[in-house]
Length: 258
Length: 255
View: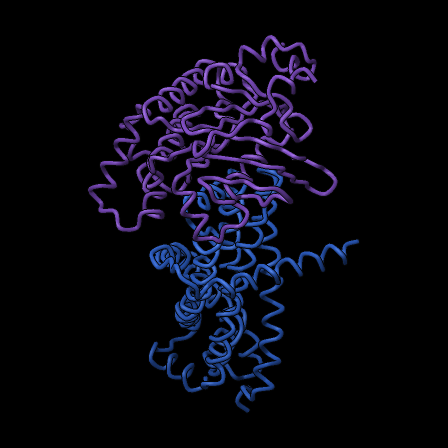
């Protein structure tokens, strides 16, 4: 296959010590539905990878396996040198403290104010942190997304785009080394979506974070990716830069860019 | 098919309950959240429980009076109302009101958290969501319902005293003395103990329905609804068992 010849993620040459995330031979099924079948991926420190796939192709399942919310049937997911499926609850929490996760539905806690939403991961991961430090970090995270004035508001009082920004601020507050974005622009109008993508790119540059973005929004793929991975039939079908894949004649690749 | 569904549901609920017992005494202890839930579940339910208890005591007295007059035992009205409220009506009606208010709110809240990925977000934030959301709510419901039952019983008896005074005049101290004289330890203790079980049932069923909610917002509505229905039925089943157990242990009515 032309696309596979160009770049197959599982067969990449790993840069020694530079990989933040290495996924090998990942399988995940729900009954007879084989969502992930021999999926391979490597992400280097500071790299921004977008996983592109159709709806229902297993993108969200992949990202939930990476963060340990779903247990894979087979295969390994090494993050910071540790295999996620083998970790106990405490070890998993230690890894999760270094990982940000932006949920598709934002997942802001409805019963808490924005301040409490942002404080929550801080309090849970860093129990010793003082209230002054917490306040400073909350305001810093809100400044990063330009929403300082919403600190004492409830999530229900905010627009969809603002909620997405707050969710991003909550993700940033722990200064994660890698951020996983699950469909960051879904449900937003084009202008707001563009603003969110620009913010993601800005954050990547500012904090030099590694990013794994799950998306089917081509604007998002184009703007936020150093490398694009195409997920077809539960495996990494093709990988390369946006421009190289754009020129790829393989019908399975081409369908995403038409 | 329905039998299979019922057995599957019962099995899942048992596993969920087993998970609760496995996790509730292990650190990390969510004391602050437990206190908050006690406030939300207990204190915030007091006005509704108080109002229904007051009306129940008043109406029960008014309904019983004609029969008591016919039999010429009107003077025993406080005694019979006292026993009825303390032994049965107080705990069961309070538990049903509690199931309607708290069971549905827990089912809807956790169900909505589940479908909007808030429970997953909690897990990613280094929190055991089962402990933070389920254990605290079930413990709060178990601890708060007996308190509400005690307060509800007292308010209900006050309503009953007013009911007695609609057609005749009885001082509060005489009414109270008659109620207390006709009650024994074996009336109060089983009723008090069974209300812990009622509270636990409402908490665990509400949490189970919410925590396992699926199919979007429709599923949330269904969770809230079935939390109330199932916990109401379970309250009556526990009540039935409690009578048998209390009898077997010798907690019988004074003869």
